[in-house]
Image (cartoon, rainbow, N blue to C red; front, top):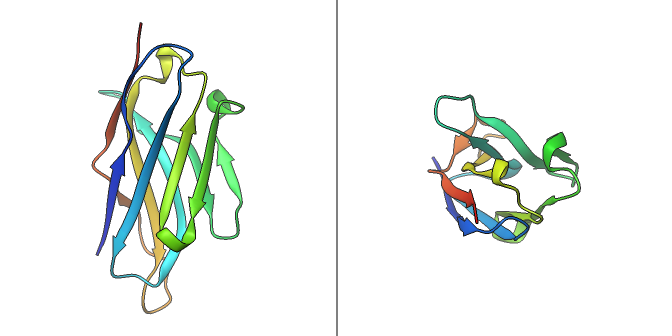
Length: 121
């Protein structure tokens, strides 16, 4: 099993910044991919940004140039630096990870519990 612990959400004014963190722990060999998704009530969860082992990153068009995803492999931690935040960035943000299991397979998705980000004046 893999546990994902998120932190860093909160209330911020438009134009402000927040940094989300997510650390993976549990029984696995290494991380294959980590990323962030967001979801509003009643809507589907959408990709914000992701990174796979090797450093390749992927961003939603709506956050390109404002958000930056980074990863510390030694700490099994992924970060999401969110700058120039807008009210439309108000969502619950979920950490996602897929890992290499101890048998060498790539796992299914694991999810964190979610952290609320509110952008409001």
